[in-house]
Structure formats: C-alpha cells, structure tokens
Length: 496
Image (tube, rainbow, N blue to C red):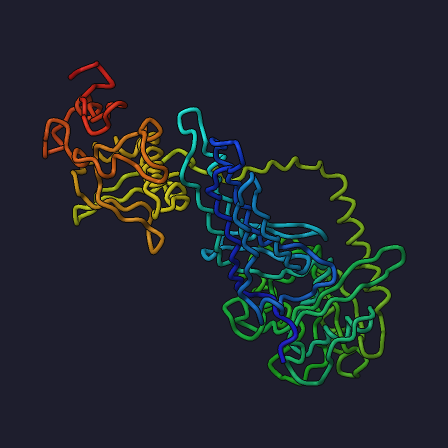
C-alpha cells in the first residue's frame, strides 16, 4: 500500500454564495413597510495550511476532490444568510502549489503558512440593499455567485539542510539510520528505498535535518529509475553529501565514475551547482572497500572536495562527517542572518473590474467577455422581468450597448456573454438603455420588455457599421410619463 505521495492533483471547489431575499415588510397599520430582504452569505473558501504533523500528500491522493460549504440565502426582516464554513486542508511543510500550466502560485514553507486555493462566491444583495431613491421597492434580488473551481498541482519538496545523494545501495539509508533516530528500510538489493527519508542530526550545538534521495541512476534527470521523482527533495538543501560505494561488486563501477555520473545528472536537473559538496566514501569496513577508498581519496581531494572515509554499518568515521555537515550548516545560517532582509512586496493580480471586450464571430453572432459583465449575468434571476431590466441597465451603464453598436451588431443578432456552459445567449434589442428605475409598473416586471418599440433602430438604419459616432450616441429614450412613446435625443452634440 502506498504510504508516501509527494505529487497530487487537487480539484478544489469553493462554496457558492447565498441568494439575496425578496421581501416586503408587513406590519399592522404600516401599509408601506418597504423592502426588507437580507443579503446572502459568503461561500466558504478552501484554504491550504502548513501543518507540522503532515509529512505526505497521501490524503489528497485518496480524496482529490474537495468542496467547501455553500452559504445560506438571505431572509426577510433584514436578516442576512449565514456564511459557508471554510474548508481547512493541512499540507506538509515545503508544499509547492502550481496551476495546470505549471506556474507556481505559492510556496508554502513554515508552519502556519496559508494559501487560499479556491475563493468562495460572494452573496447576492437582497431587495433592501438594491433600494434607492428612484427604485423604492425592488421586486427582485441578486443571486449569489458560484464558488471558484480550480485544478491545482501540489508538489512536496522536503525542507532538509543536508541531502544525501548516490547510487542505489550506496548506503544512504544506513547512514541516515546511523546518525539520527530515523529507521528507514535497509536491505541488500537496489531500490530498497522508495521514499525520501528524513532524520534529525545533533552535531555539538548544531541541529540539522538530513534527507536521502533514492533511486539516482544514469538518466535519472530524463525519467529513468526513481531519481526524477525525488530530485525535487534536494532543491532546498544547503549542502549535498555524495555517498560513494567503495565495496560494490559491479565491475563497471568505481567511486570516481559514480561521482561523475551523479554530478552529470544534477547538472541536467539544474539549480544545484552552487551547493557545497562533501564526499563520504562508504563501506570501508570491507577489505576491498578500504583499499578502494585509499585509492580514490587523493583524486577527489585534488578536485577541491572534503572527503571522509566512513562505514555506516560499523559506525566508523561518522563523528567527523557529521561535524563537517554541522560546520557547513552553521556558515550557511550565519550568511542568511547577515544578508539584508528583502522587503517582500505582494502584487496580487488585479481584477479587470471595468474592462470588457466585444468580439464579432464568423457566424454573425457577438461575444462579450469581461469580469464585470459576466458577474452581472451570474447575479441575475432570469425568471424575473425586473431583474432582467436591471441587468440591461447595468450593461448599458458599463458601455456594452455602445460597444455592440460599434462592432456592427444589428437587432435580433445573437449576443453571448461569457464562454462555455455558463454563457448566456440572447437576441440583442438595441433600444434598451439605462433608466428602468424611472418606469412605473407592477413589482417584478419591466415595461420595456413588452414595449412595441423594442428592437427598433435609430432612424431605422439597418447597416449599423455606416453610423457615425454621433449617430451611435443617438438612442431611443422613453418618456417617463408614457414609456410606450419614444423620443429621440442626442447625448453628444444635441443632434436630432
């Protein structure tokens, strides 16, 4: 059974926002109580939090789909709906969050570090929140927005000070067991270790962590063996220790060749050239191992490396090796303290709240894309005519009406707001413009929808592309006293 997972795909679905409430206050002897519908609650977020008790992403491997709670709708008497509870997911220290394209969204290092994986939907306004001086008693409310749905890649990169690297069966697991309290699986066959093992080492007053990387063989950086899967676990290490097998029984291998092969794989993987190296010649308790270590030590020292002859099984030379590791870690930590702390400036991606784009499609239809118009559509109750009229007002005030004119849209042309299954498609009526609050009619209705003038063009021109900017500004307006009687006016230039 799998017990260690360091890369998973998480499908996160945040909670939906609650719908606003349509309610009119009713009380004895109070004939005009006014709207009192409350707002919907906020949907729950999905939050990743670093937990010291987590060491693997195994839980997400078994349950990759996670969903937060949705909010409650609003109620009458100005009662807002309850917020949906946030879903807190614990992840190990060193978890990297990426999107589908591989872009890094967050690097979670440090216990308690948080990242919102999916944002909950906002609650819709009730009719009390939509009331204004001109719209005294709205007969509609805004719907809650759906929660964010994201597919994320979680990768675990172990947070260790020292990384042990080497060929399979070189003795890395034995070394971790000998210098720390960790008890990894140890056997006399290749690829015994299938997961990185971490151990805490005490060298004098210095305490540091050591991790071994299993499965490094020639071609590991291209996916052979297990090295590519676990090379990420040494990216955070301050130093690397080459564990070289001096007692191997394979005739085509020797410590110098093993060292060169591993260094070549590290160079192909990239990002590790600046890490200090220490060389541990292991298995000197064997007669042939001691002879081999004596032969290659001078060659490796001539290349500028610190070389130590050890035996993890017999516990020979381990104190000198661990103190050398501790000295490097001390120097690394002192350099980090001396470095000036860089002021981190967070620049969140701005939301294009006011921008939108109108695209003319090859089939004669038009597509409107933008955060704000798409949000307006999601908040609209299309079963309520007054809500549809309010949507038309918001789109006209945003400038969608004018942009469709300039793009060449004609009456009854198909207009799509958004893309995919969530898009809203309708036949465009170019005479609808802002001002629904000025129209008197039954609650929940919009007189413009039933108007016989709906869909008529300015001056009955069919070729909108030939209109000038001044002519585009000339639009139908409705007389407040009689909404069925149109009058033509010009916003710019006062032309008629």
